[in-house]
Image (cartoon, rainbow, N blue to C red; front, side, top):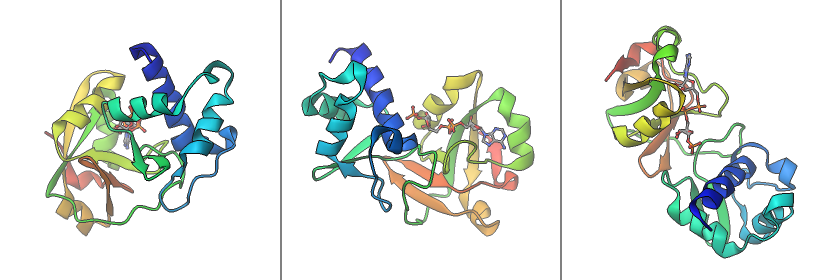
Length: 181
Ligand code: HQG
């Protein structure tokens, strides 16, 4: 796979594992959102432009993913985060005191008023460091990094879940626990 192919195969894989598995004929495990690698490969190679993909190509995408989007569990594969529906049941965890969220300047007034909402996804995405938040927030305009006080958010009813690789998820984050970093 060259870099362009890797990127576009990664997009197809996130679509199948985060958003519309049914469209690919996949049924994800309701607990961890995984499916057998063999079924996954079959679903990918059934796509018109992707009939030539091998398991090694998929392994390459998983290995090289800048944000470690995917995860193997034995012979099963899943997306670690980013899901649009109730595809995974994460276990609540105790987050570090501060987490970061990357967003853009235009969204800021609304976030400071309503708090962080999952919008089109199952959860709000947060990170332990600013690197992941910077990548996330740079996608749509002028980057703003928000700092989340997790103890305060929990007192206001937010629940946090760990998705691995420094990424945390929350059902919502109240405005009183968010500030510009
Ligand atoms: C914003 C990508 C207005 C929120 C990324 C974000 C990440 C609000 C957008 C991962 C709001 C939702 C997740 C409110 C939140 N008012 N805007 N009250 N609350 N927002 O894509 O966190 O490359 O669903 O700040 O890099 O940007 O796909 O979430 O700007 O890692 O692997 O609403 O997905 O990773 O956007 O991104 P998203 P996100 P991948």
